[in-house]
Image 1: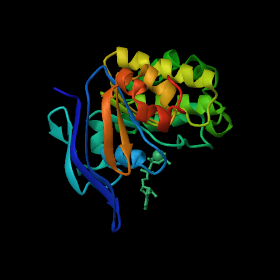
Image 2: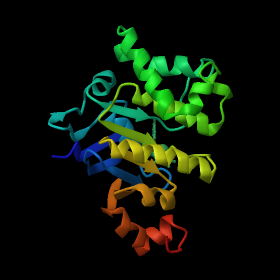
Image 3: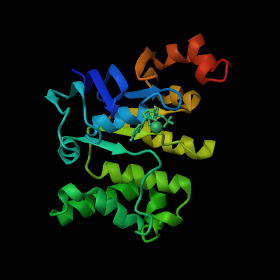
Image 4: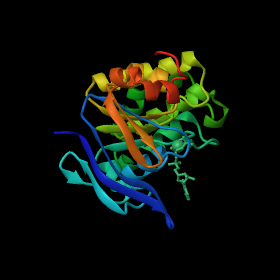
Length: 240
Ligand SMILES: Nc1ncnc2c1ncn2[C@@H]1O[C@H](COP(=O)(O)OP(=O)(O)OP(=O)(O)O)[C@@H](O)[C@H]1O
Ligand SMILES: [Mg+2]
């Protein structure tokens, strides 16, 4: 059974429908890429999955439970964590305070929260050095690490990431993607929204291409990287 099964998902803003009944699946231990150009509806998809935008129609099954329409905190408690577009850290707070806020659902369990924060410093040693630094003064790559670590504090089954590579140098993107692969290898399901199709298709197992609110293509990452339409639209026309 898939960890995440989305069917017929419709979401919109006011009178405008943005997602026209999309479907996708993510299994445990799988990186699934969601590619698409600006305005295709990628962020809207992730926000709907996380309970941040109302769902107009469709099912969002997390294992065997339909989470469509549940409030965001309940969805988080069921094991879906969201790393938002542009990171959305609390800039005037330290790295450690940002991580503590990620643990809002277990804030009554101080020892457990401490254990999970320490685990994040093992995964991201750079953050241990900078635990007292204000998040707003971190480099872009470090901020992305905090955003991912903050989402991981709740030990999710499914991690959805919205353009983690945005604005980062290729070497930094590679280190972030290495972490994502490690999480996949530990059995987490990953839904990765990206515009950086070339690097993303190298680490993804499967991918979907979303255009104007509909799924245009889906397949193994390998097949999509070879697809002429993907190459001309997302890979600059050259073979990957
Ligand atoms: N809060 C909102 N109110 C009204 N329209 C919105 C809102 N958020 C997004 N939209 C519209 O919905 C469509 C899809 O936006 P979305 O942010 O999901 O695209 P995206 O694929 O994430 O794009 P990008 O690659 O630029 O991040 C766009 O036409 C956008 O203008
Ligand atoms: Mg977006």
